[in-house]
Image (tube, rainbow, N blue to C red; front, side, top):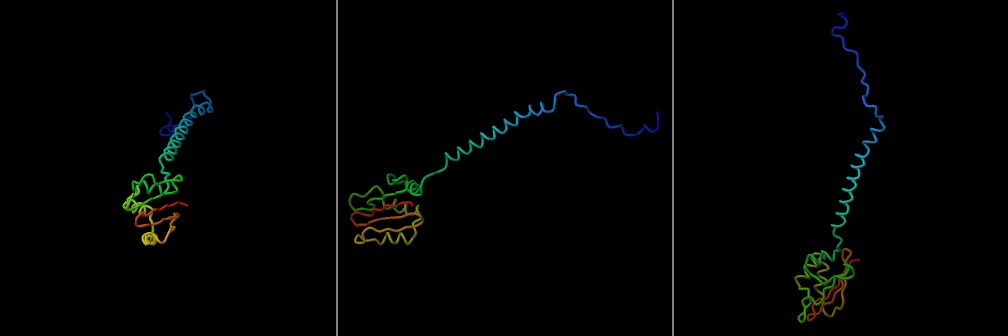
Length: 154
């Protein structure tokens, strides 16, 4: 034994790949896994988009107000017109009660000034109109016939 070999590091050994398969062939085998991951991700994203579109509420503000106040049969023009007829009439009142009417006005966030205008309307005043936040109201009032109002969304 020679002294120079004791404690000396062994020379670095070179590793030779044992596989005779070319590197390109190994890469092709990995490609289907990557495609599978991409396909699954695409399906998840498309599924989430379809669910979002199906579940979102596309109701107009007028439809939402009528629904929140449990008032039916008052929406026309694909949700852009709400009609309240003979509210608080003495004879043959309409389907909408005074409580329902107040609920609808509340749901539509009618400003105090507009409510005051509505509440101070007399039979002699004829048809009145007012606007707020993209909505337009047109109404009449008579003590016997009650309030008849149409609200449209611009």
